[in-house]
Amino acid sequence: MKPDLAAAIHLLHRAPFGALATQAVRMPGYPFATALPFVADETHCPVFLLSALAEHTKNLLASPQASLLVTDAGQASVLESPRMTLVGDVHRIDAAPALRERYVPYLPDAEQYLGLGDFAFFRLVPQRVRYIGGFAQMGWLEQDAWQAAQVLGLDEEADLLRALGAHVLGVDCYGIDLMRDGRRQRIAFDSVLSPEEILDEAKRLIAQGSRG
Image (cartoon, rainbow, N blue to C red; front, side, top):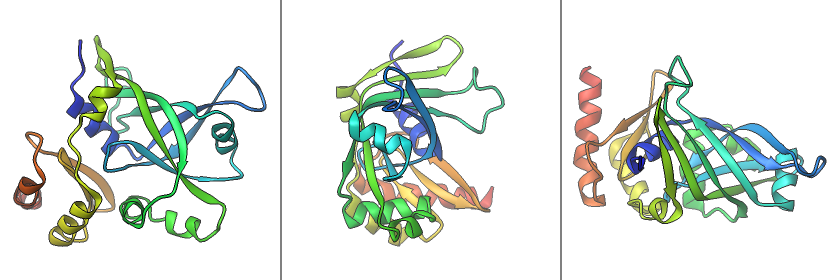
């Protein structure tokens, strides 16, 4: 089965954290897994804010090869709910101000970490993605398929966020992320939208949700 790219992207955007497995420096040959929050960037790649003192950071600086397990935390059974593993390389990046502005609304604690001086941004670029939609629903997404996903530029997103209001955390061509009653919520578009189509559809879905 070939997984649906949009379903995988929605899972990535709605997940507040994942389990990052790196190659252990202290125990060569063994994987080292850590629970970490992340935010998907405009290219649908997970971005982490990591301390230089952390074990996983030291592992990544020695070897960038890693994998990230993402699950649908809202489901009762992990074996019957969507989940995926992104396998790729994690490298430190110099995050542009626009990327920082996207990151902090999702993870507000990041603002104080950035002031400490020993935290830096890292991005996982997937080589392959193993997506499991449920029992007997699984398959691989290759790097070229992931890189072909529709992208909304950070500046375009910033313009849309100013028009949509402070309760909207982020928006992309596949859906919008909201904060409602202290909880993060992902609303998927019915189809992949162009940047010009997003504003009207996002407003409609937000209004619809408010009435519900």
